Length: 121
Image (cartoon, rainbow, N blue to C red):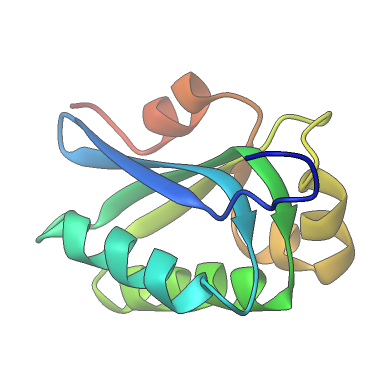
């Protein structure tokens, strides 16, 4: 993106054994939260162990927080689990803490820690 242009979120899904890692980069706001949610959901298949890497996000608003809460709810209903990856220096770490979402969904500092916590491959 050039000066003044926003970089909307990109979603990259990776399979790690029985878990799926969703790497999100760019910005998530009301304009694209639904699309991001659809892309993540479509890529999960029957997987119920999911880690979402938020360290590449430059912006996350309430629509993005709602997306994460809904994803967590769906996985919990399916006896699955969701972990978020956000190192302390990540732009979104404060947003997660202030919103209370970090208290509701486990947050790991590294992708490796999140995948390990989701269980053996």
